[in-house]
Amino acid sequence: MGPLTLDNAHPHSLADLLSNSLVLRQTAPYLPVASIFALAATSKALHHVVFHSPDVFRYLDLSTVKSAIVPYAPLDSGGISWRAERIDESLTEDEFYSGPIRGIFSKLQRRHVLHNVQTLVLDGLSVPADLVREIIAENTFNVRILSIREAKHLNERKLQQVLRYAARPGRPAGTPKIKGIYFFGQREAVQEKRKENTTNKKSTSPSPKGVTSSQGAQIGAEWNHKSSEALSAALSPSSDKWYQCSGRMMPKRASLEWAETLKACEGIIAFDAVLCRGPRHDPARAFISNSDSESSGLPHPASYLSPAVATVALGSKGCETCHSCPERPAVFGQSPSAELPLLNPIPLHSSSLRAAQIPHTVDGSKPPPLFVRCEDCLKGRWCERCHKWWDEDCYTVSAVAQRTELQQTEFMENATTDGTAHMLPKQSIKVHMGLCVNSCLVGEMMAGAGSNGMWG
Image 1 (cartoon, helix red, strand yellow):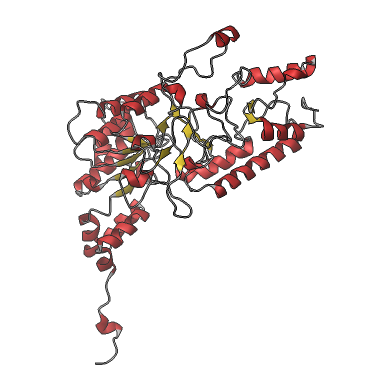
Image 2: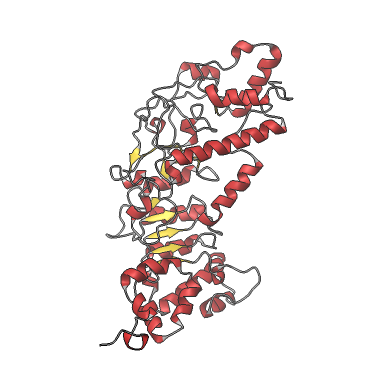
């Protein structure tokens, strides 16, 4: 028999290759929706593969689909159903803003692939709370992981009601199908750009007024902060921001209502944020007040705090002194899933809660511990520049450290003018005005020396 040639080799076609579920499952999430439909239009074989395989639309990202964006002008961009709704005078505001996405869902439903979607990304789109309710509650959907970060026209209070109802004690067995929701974080596509813009405007760690008033000191402080962040990321055992000394993880502080919603969904629906478990949130461990705090008009350092969303990532090292914390750090594989946040990026090849929560270690070692807290639990005990912190067992916060930043700044400025130098922070105070005394605050003083600031 002669050598094999192209004429008689019968090589496999692209349709044959994509018919392999393993290949298709690994490839499909990287293809934009428009490319998937274009691929299906090239041949009957590929059309069959695209619309008869459960793996093609398992991961669906609509955030980049132009037809999913609500146009400002009354243009028809959502299909026949969207056109019909837009001429209806009884159309509600939520129905109007959800029209484009509903049009896409309708198209997928007619092709019998909507029920295959298990990871749905709607970041930055118009996603009213009623649409989220349908995705969670209706049988036409089978979504396990939903991302609605930076969604527009989303009534948060109404969304909280939807989530609490979905997780209610008397809910039907097997509901809700959804296991995780990305809501609090930023979209991956704009995270780095926003981080760069924020850093250019001002350092993420506040500096005392007058300490670094000169331009040279400001530039030096900014570069020191960048270097500190780069070193922290390089030394971190995990590439996930929640497990690094990342500081504030959210653009704004989550409300008390969100904390109560996360509490109601605990063990049922996970989020890309968790509740703070500091001892001040435990009524059995916190003290309401004492005579010293009442006389000074300041809250007692150990006073009880209402439930709060943890917004600060403290790395995997723990307290600077004991390298742990009173509430015990969360560890993947050991702690309940409610203590672990959903991590970025959203997993492409799995829609399980485990895949969304497992930290990615740099060297493949076991997952590091997770230390996170709310800002109230860290007040006066966390350096916002280098992210060192001390827990309640290792450091008792002084009355000076409990002052607001404005009060502390006024106190420092008055101390320099009235000669009460003995009232300035001493070594017994570890954190002052958001900076650790031993390194960052001293560095700010040295950087501001000779300037027009209060250290000049």
